[in-house]
Length: 360
Image 1 (cartoon, rainbow, N blue to C red):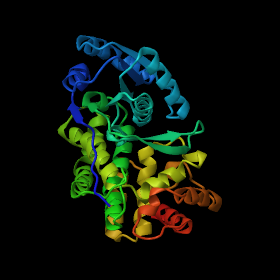
Image 2 (cartoon, one colour; image 1 turned 180 degrees about the vertical axis):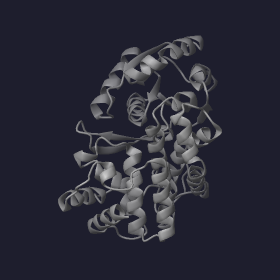
Image 3 (cartoon, helix red, strand yellow; image 1 turned 60 degrees about the vertical axis):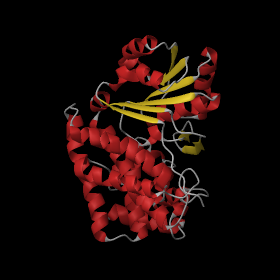
Image 4 (cartoon, rainbow, N blue to C red; image 1 turned 45 degrees about the vertical axis):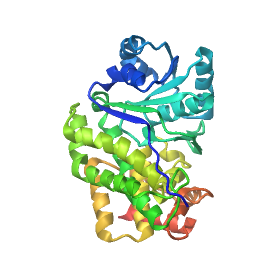
């Protein structure tokens, strides 16, 4: 098996980065016209910046309003809007689902892809895939694309203005990166682009974890104060770039499969992606039989920043055996990343891991 590493062509981060969008697109030689995919709140918040930045750089553009869920219907609607203006670049602005939808639109029409996350809530912005959901909020499939985004641009002033919960959710997603990549590497398994993990991917995944342990609580406090601090800058980079490169080129394991299993239960639908991944990570560490000290370190970090550590924390305070079985069966569905562990993973193991992690 060949080792494969992938990444966006360019990553830009810092206070006020939104104003540099047009300039950065010109520097990369990206073509117009441009379709922007964004929610109504982000259109209202960032629209004036786009009006200044894009025409000044020579880009004609149109805006398509994102409906809130990355479904096939949303991608089809965005693709229709892109074709109507002859778009050759698609810019996504928003959280993980809006960016997943925008990447789907870009892939559908063969356009360049630009991601402008307004939250550091997941590691989606740098990736060449989208998690596509059903209209009911369950995971439908993961769509893989030929290439990563051309440009990822993160305005940390915008991130600092968002609710604390979103940054913390991003930490949950990013925290799993090293532990999942480690399992895939030990199993000599394949990563998200079908190759073996490079030592670069492993090193970035481990750095992501160390950064979170060092700066996570301080970064969460900074966002609560609406302040851009060095700790926040480092955690935004960890949540977005380090985790994005680490998960895609390192590989996913049980934690993200448990997330997918949790989406099969309606009680969890009010919780964010990274919140469910954080609980999935605890399940993974229990199932793997990791040392108590390591599990305690992860659990204590989750408690310190406000990530879920129990079923009640993710909307399942009285989960029955039937509910746990539903989650476990979905977790080990064919093709799920749970099967990249260095041992066979069964639904019974996951069900026991869920109960034990909840009890911790």
